[in-house]
Length: 267
Length: 253
Image 1 (cartoon, rainbow over the protein chains, first blue to last red):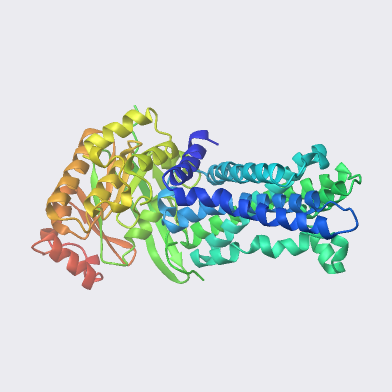
Image 2 (tube, rainbow over the protein chains, first blue to last red):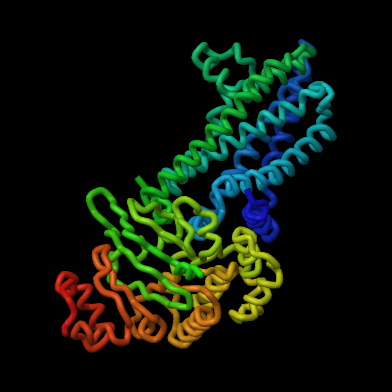
């Protein structure tokens, strides 16, 4: 892997953000709105609840982590979509660039863009709504790590989907976080779900994170080994997503899909 | 001493879609300082061939060697020696000229990139467009940017797919002159597709006529028409397009 090639892919995305205010604002605007909305929601729930349960770390913390996951995924897919929208595949893939270098460039971009969103969310949630990360302790770092890895995996998988099905398939990608959220229990314990949904949840790394968030927010003990399962699954998902992208890319090179990708839809 | 390999060697190259052969077992070389024209009617297999040479389309069979490096087994090393410009592959319009050159310079691993970009901006008369987004440039200016990108890594094999299409005659002459100068001064070879037979005759050292995925004729563009009983390269082109089977016979004595 040659660092200059990875840097080339990431630099391209940096230039796009640098030159366009309209691209920079969405990096933090929507997550900031989410923090404000859920911040007031948790305040209200705290005021009407007689149980004494603090909704701030359980709900606001969960929304923060879920938004971070969605931003990581979108960081990868947006970089890929830029090449789709500007019909740049021929220019990019007719170079000495390897597939791991290309994907690494997208991941590097995602690290930068999602970090901006995370920073804004941490700032707002802690200063305005008093979210204290002491409630999660050192587990906050592996929580973020698992969601980051799973976000990267889904970003790569989504890019493979659009490469295979054509530019119009990007509309399959945007709702993926919303589609997953009922299964991973962002807002409620997994035990709330019917049995079959719990089975799906066990295969999804974020489920382990949100169970942990709720347990720690309630003052309970959360086993690192349980989160280890989530971490292992996230790493496995990245490997599988990488293999899937490679398979789709090879298919696209074999069938001519890559060379004529600018067509609106491909069957 | 072993002679250096041609910049491009294509052997029995074939691409099949279902039961239709888009490229049907073609073989040819491009030598150093040589400009070879790849000609043929629409659908003859020119772009399919170019796409296989660029590594974005996998051949069904056959081999491609760039400076002796096998493209199938050593893709990175082969494509480090290659670059291209095509009218249907403009650079991203939302980046400036300098930004595009920097991004692709990094991807091609160009040493001394800043100096190389400056030299190309000067050589292709792009200095005043350095900070202009490529999307707002005229066709001729965009072609010059694409050519500057294609020269970034000083490729041994330069592939040009209709580089002067949609350009006015004066700009087309300017582009041709630059490419001829590039081929003349170094150890590189150029494979050029065009539908402008006047241009091909003026620029190419050798031409290959493709029809139905096969090389029907090849030779010097200045003498080839007469060898086959035609007054001009354009007439020969029309004959290839209309009656490819007739031209598979041996040339007139």
